[in-house]
Length: 307
Length: 307
Image (cartoon, rainbow over all chains, first blue to last red; front, side):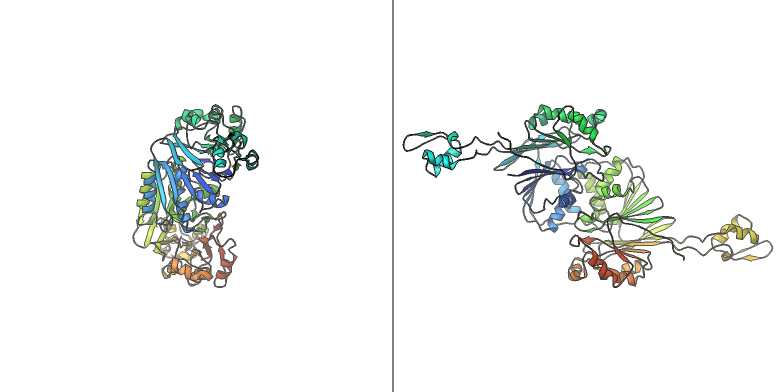
């Protein structure tokens, strides 16, 4: 099952000719999960061809303009395209007031139902059959969240020909074996699941920090993630500034990645001062080698690994 | 004195990879006059290198999202750049409520004073020493304005050597002649202004319609304009749709230009359905030949003509 991350906006606070304001979108099968929605994201979505009609959930990290000002335009364009599917929006307290204020002062009507969830506590934000989205508090200058998309383990591959050769009749006994339960045949033989089914496949995990200082809660959230998307607004030289503004440096992001034993790290929310982000990459690489700096429209496909 | 129009966003309602949402900026000497501010305009301003610190006035035509949703991000980026100069914002009733709602629900503080003017009647919106901005009601689905930048006539060129050769002493008599008044020398001779001064130079005039059906008031406003920037959302084939939504077609815009005897016409607010806008151009050209279709980042310098 495909799981693709597309970086729609990778700028920190101020856009640049190459970097739009913040957002990433995860496409999982036919569904979109959009994390943050800075100004201009609807246009980035058009360029990236991700579509406005899909099943979509939006997760906002915090209420700074560079992370939310793309929402009203996105809603409006979805309506101009006559979207009908419900849209879920999750975000910290205040997100409802923002959307309501928009509805009242900018003239637009929605063609689709929208449900807004204000997050008051960390935990599971949405619990779907195949995945959940988990949120923890980040450490930023305003109330801010970090999110993890966590796929649930899936039953291992079932081998019908093996089951048949042992003499298990097709039907409920197959299901039981697939679910990991041993069964007894009418001839008295016990069949163990591992005889006909591979071990369960772990799901994949993607973590997006939003704006934050390095955080123990995020390290826990990102434990063994396939992909950690961590902000790195300032280079190591500006660590003091990063500390004051509650942002991170490449070395700090890399330390989080290392402690969390993630597979891969991507740095984003890059300050406009870094026209060439090589310096950020080099600083992170010293601590965590499997790292890159995000670019707008960069795509990363997350494979299943053999566990 | 330089007078340059830069098209920052030329899309109608929905952006495209090539067209941002609406705005044009006029740079007159060191000052900026921004007309409309669709989502993404701060980034377009960065790309066009127009600057965030200049003396700036903003004129909003109407409160549809594609014309105003770039305002809060622009204010925020101006503040991040530590702008100090006052910012004037003019727009229809409701613009104050929009900005106030933004201030209350999105967390940002302004580093500069801002004055918001809600326009209740057509007329002169700002009256500067060298120019005025005049607004009339357009004909759109919501209260909407069209604007004209009108430079005031300037005294004709004064020729000091001619004045000296006639015997006019430097000083107050020179000023009188420059202002168009005849004077009398001590020897009894009357000097007419035209002996030492060229005729007054007319100012230049640029008209921007915002969203509108063809309108008699706009024809009057645009009379003999150097440049008319008229919306042409739909092609002639969709005239009925244009009528319903209170937009214009290329032929309608061209007729307005012809009736107003403008020097040049630019079509903008182009629907996303026209990937190639040649059809719009051809339809307008049949009626008004000196026309082009706007593109993002297109620049037009407006010269003085010999009047």
